[in-house]
Image (cartoon, rainbow, N blue to C red; front, side):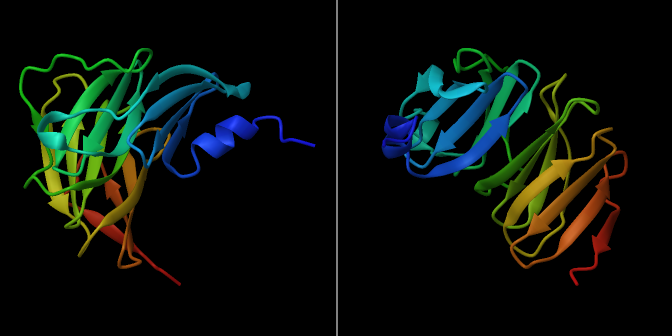
Length: 184
């Protein structure tokens, strides 16, 4: 007996990052493609962007969903904004980049706080305003890669985990202040 979605699983063996809403699932694969799938039937691909080409041959490394925008970061420290329905690039006045141009590793979006956070390979987290599309602040929270981040539901705090197995809770209104969480 064949699995229901055998073709889907054979075609894309390794997903790099997954985001889900009530209706849609966004999947970033290691082959640089992004798919938008129907949440009620993940075998149904609504949109697929193969081998997403970014400036300077950059490779997409992470993504965050903010409303109808899919923010993607790359291995050259750039941040791009795509239409969340079509995956077409949106025009932005000033190019967005991690604070020192370090390769981006992780991203998180807060709808409530209108922020997108980008964690990089050197331990910095750069915050961007989704309204102005400008960098608001940055700070070095970790000694090396920021593996993952998540905003609280209210968007007033960001939880980050670094490769050194240390996690921090950061107040988004005062991002320079961080609380190290016990790793035990």
